Amino acid sequence: MSSSRFSVVLILLVALCGFTLSRDRFPVDPALTYCVQQATKTAASLPATEPNLPRNILNGKKNWNYISYKDWTSGFWPGTLWYIYEYTKDPAWKAKADSFTRELTPLAFQKAVDHDLGFQMYCSFGNGLRLTGNADYKKKLLATADTLATLFNPKVGTILSWPRSVPNMEWPQHNTIMDNMINLELLFWASKNGGGKHLYDIAVSHATTTMKNHFRPDYTSYHVVVYDRETGKKIKGVTHQGYADNSMWARGQSWAIYGYTMTYRETKDPKFLDFAQNVSDVYLKRLPKDLIPYWDFSAPDIPSAPRDASAAAVTASALLELSTFVKDKAKAATYRAKAEQMLESLSSANYQSRQVNDAFLLHSTGHKPNNSEVDASINYADYYYIEALIRLKKLQTGKPILANL
Ligand code: GLY
Image (cartoon, rainbow, N blue to C red; front, side, top):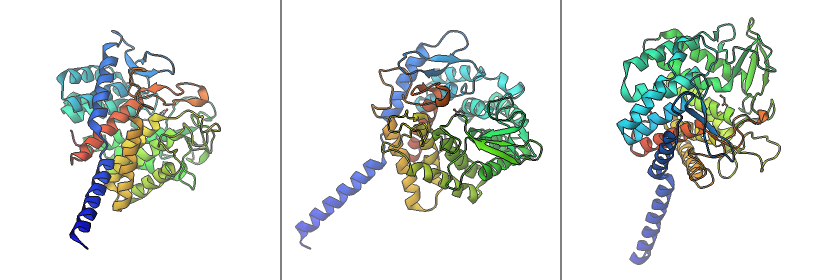
């Protein structure tokens, strides 16, 4: 090869590498700075008295609706504030995060009325403990893990998600919902921090029993499984928030992706890693072009059906972690690239709220069959979006995903 032709080939190769690298390096700081700006506006407009935790901004509206510590989403605003503190290192954000976190304290000690304790307390107190080492937060988390464990039914092998009558769930039989996988993180943490081995065993039993009963042969998930509370036998798989019993409800599948990735992290049992990949692959295969799912993969009005940005944010965060566990380099790179593309989509003018309202994101869907929070801004979309951005920043700077920034 002549030297001039060699130079041309070399230049092309360098340009190609540069292009590939830049495609892999989603610019995370502008997105995080945007989150800080939006949260600053939200924080400035909060009510002076409870309920003062932002939950949603409905489609076409400008203002947040607020909830108290009792709501299942109460941990997401304090958790978001902890991530903002982690990014900015500004003590003013730390003080805000601490104050909203403490509002949830009663949940640690009162009777469990729902499985959502992990969402509520681990996002708030859990992030707070990680960033501050506050011994008081640790005490509250350990107490909450014991409270959550009271919902475990050893005959079934899972936690009772809704300890009350819910339509179609054959109360007082035992119900378990896919979302419940996320709450296991609190139990895993507690078992390593003085809470006892039984909490680990409950978490593993829940994940294993759910793996057996909650999935169809193609790895798509039922939202809810109802069990006979005495024999532990599966009665039926149904939906509550999805389109149909047999459809793949987008956020339910996202909880599965996140939950099994986390369960592998905590157990190192390869069957959970395989499973996390299987439940991810079926979701990835069926996504629309911009990688933000419709609220249900079988919604009858696709492509006009509402999207669920929250499911995309949960999945992006989970895939970033999954990419660090998968040994096959090409597959790991695919999970990482998909997560970055999801974040790129979410960070575009199509999905960021910007001037529309003070949330981070538009276009999430909470409970479509109830016509509630359809195509709205919702606090958990914002929480998992900023979590994913912070995780990506850690990966881009060579830090483990759970280290502090
Ligand atoms: N945990 C309820 C939901 O995902 O909407």
